[in-house]
Structures are given as C-alpha cells and as structure tokens.
Image (cartoon, rainbow, N blue to C red; front, top):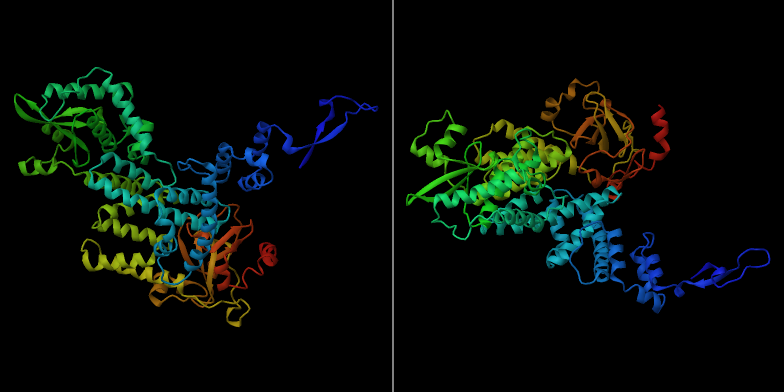
Length: 595
C-alpha cells in the first residue's frame, strides 16, 4: 500500500517551485501512527483481521488489545464481558454473531407454524447457547443487544424475542437464590432489572452506593460495636438517629409525596439515584443500611403503608418499635401507627396481630411488584412502553405468586391485545373458568372465544392466496399497505386478508358486521394497529394513507423486513402466503395514492 508524502521532508524544491512527491510504503510508518490509522472508525474489526495478515509489521501493530476493544465497542453496542484478551473476545463475538443470524432465520420460519409456542421454539433452537457458562451467555447477550438495534425489522424483532428469553431465563435462576437466602437487596435489584430489561442495572454499583452511605453513618462516631438483639433502646435509638441524620438530613432522601405514583419510585437503583421513593422502596433501603450497621429490622406489610419493625430492651423487657422510612425514619409505637394510618379501624388484639405481622422476604417482593402493577393499571398512561412494563411485572408476579388469579387474567388480556401467546392465554382462561369464582364466567367465556378467534386468524391460512384468482377479484388492498380506519381513525398495516369474513356468527353479531353496507360478503383484513393491538377489519372501513415512521407494534417484525417509506416489505414467510401482493406494490403505490 502506498501514499504520497511531501518531498520537502527530505529537502529540495524543483525548478517550477513545486515540492516533489515520492511514494512511501504504509508499513514504513511509525508504529504509533499505524495504530492511530488502524483505530479509525471506518476500519472495522474484519479489516483489522485482514491487516494483521498482510505482513509481520502489521501483525505486531494489531497485537495492541486496545485496538480490538475499540473495534468491539464500535461494532457491538453493549457492556463488554470481562476478558483477558479483546481480540479473543472479538473472535467469539464474530462467531456468535454468525450463529445467531442463522438461528434467527430458523426461528423465524418456525414462528409461522400453527399452534407453536414461541418460548419453546427459542429454547429448542438456542440449546447449545443456553447450556454454556456465564461468560458465553454474556457474549450472547452482547451480540443480541447489537442485533436489537438493527434497522431490519425482522432481525430486530427476533433478536428482541431471543434477548428477552435469555435475559428472563437468567433472572429466574437468580430469583430462586434471592427467595431462598432471604436476600432483600438482591430481590429489589432483580425487580428493577426485570421491569427494565433495556436498562443497565448493576447490583455492584448499588451495593457500592449503599456502602458509601454506611461509611458516612459510621463517620458520625455512633457506636455500632455493641449493637445486637440485646441492645438497650437508648443504644438502638442512637443508631437510628445517626442513620436518619445522614440519610434524610445530609443526603436529603425523602418520600415522594408530590409524585407518589411515579413508577421510578419503585426501583431501588432509581431511588438511590433520585433520592426519593415510596414507603416500601425506602423501607427496603433502610433495612439494608441498618443491617450493615448491625441493626436487624423487618418489614411490616401494614395496609396502605409499609413500615419497619425493630426490637430492643427497655427496663430489661422486650420493646417493639416501628419506623416510617417514608417520613424521615420517624419512630412510632403500635398505637401511633394505628392512629395515623388506620384511624377508623377497631383495634382488637386479633386484628393487631394480623396488621403488625412481620412480612417474609418473598411477601415484600410480591408487594413491591404489586405496586408496579397497580401504578401501571391505574395511574400510568398505557402507551406501548408502559404496557410492556405491566406485562413483564405480571409475569414476575405469577413467577413468585402462581395462585394470583387477578394477575393471570390481566396478563391474558394483555397477550390478547398484542395477539401473542394464544396457547398460554387459552390455558390461563380454562384454569380460571374451572377453579376461580372471583370472576364473571360470562366474561371469561367471552375472552376464551376471543382467543380462539384470534388464534384462528393467525393460523388459519397455510395455502398461498393469489390476487389473480377469480374468488379474490374484490380484494383491493395488499399486505404491507398502510391504512387508516374511517371510523376510529387509527393507523395500521395489513398483514393478511380473506376474500370474505371467516369469523363465526357470534363474533359477527358482537362486532355489528351486519350493520355494514356489504356486511360479511366483502374482503376482510388482518391489521397491526399503531396502538399495539391487532384487528380484523372490513374493506369498506379502511382507506390507504401515508405514515412517515414505523408503526408501533410488537409484532411488526414478525411479518415485515423493513418500511421503505411507502409500504412495508414482507418477510419471506409472509410472501409465501401472499406471493402476488408485493410484486405489484411499487407499480401501483403512487397511482392508488392519487386515486
């Protein structure tokens, strides 16, 4: 490889006053200059591999591990696993990347097979990945995070599916440890990770932040050496005052009264970052801090307000006290708790025992998750992001509390809204119909019918549909076209069609099909709606429209590869079902828009 270098470096100007130019070989450059050149972003890791094979000098320059680290960070946008050699890590990522792309093509085809469960497909295809050690899993996750950011809708969709499967599978294994070992901090961190899979939540960082708080408390000079179960009330209160001084007065942690239902109040990492929270998140933080200082506190699932309970000796007798972490660590007695939080409730001894019962660690986790669920159900705007967090929170709730029928029903409704996991929806609804008396059986039956119908819409077609066939002559629109509903004004994209309505009579009556001009004797279209739902709509109710951005639907990548600005380009599997649809798309698009 040769470049031009100014001849004046070696001296001399020619007769015309122009400095002569000579050729200098790239391999004659100083090592530092070569490293600088090789480190440029337009030279990727594959180029670096090829350069290292050119000559011995380039090979030596390419041994700089810093170069490989930069190439990895440029190609794979993720937190890197710990490694001794970034070149080796780069090679592993390259191999995993190739394998993943092949696996995605296999998984994509299997997703179109009727009555298959997505999780089972992913588990089966990724078996060789999932049986690897933790480092290999971290490399897989790193590759998946990059693929999730792909511009190709189908690659992004399946990478997201696989990532979530691997991510939650890993967290489920950690949950067993958190519950078994009563690790309150570990569980709180896992809740934050589970509900925010796209955010980086580091347990180590959180532990370091808490250790910093503990160090500040120790620096107040408070005596913690003699703190034990037999400590006097005076000793314990001295420690409580020191904790409150640092946490609330110096660091200004506080209960978020103004924005109580802000979802960020529920996650331990954000509580530490924003220094505000709700009773249970601040309470968990207080318990962890106190434990590191030798003081054992336990949570109390008091109605409407999570409290902390501790024991000390007063006049030689056992004395029980309560702490309100939401209100600056205020110390309360049982009567004060009742007067403040349940002023109108009778106070029999039996009721007191129930109200002030110490919560098990698992019960605290369940209450924390219940808070997240309730905030999303009643207070948060249910946009796509909130609905996804609600879905993951309900899945976690059922993992820890499998008999929670209300969560089971709500999760089934969300799956139906998205048009996913039909097999699981049917299982859940059948279980609720058979075992639960809490819900109206008519509502459950209606949901079950809806799930069967949506499942039929998804899987009823196996043979290709040709627009050129006589029976399909009235079908005006094609898969991939962006449409607007004339009555409800929502934007959607077509991913399937029938030459007439294929739903049963009960559905037709329920949806008012016979009130339409052409009733059920007109083409009907399967559409993905911008609010995340799926619908089956009559041809007379929709018209073609334009949309500049990609429709916000979780399943868009299952059916389409990309949006070209005019229409959605179908995946190979969808084109096999509608082979003629997109052959005409470019030809007719502008004509139809003008018409």
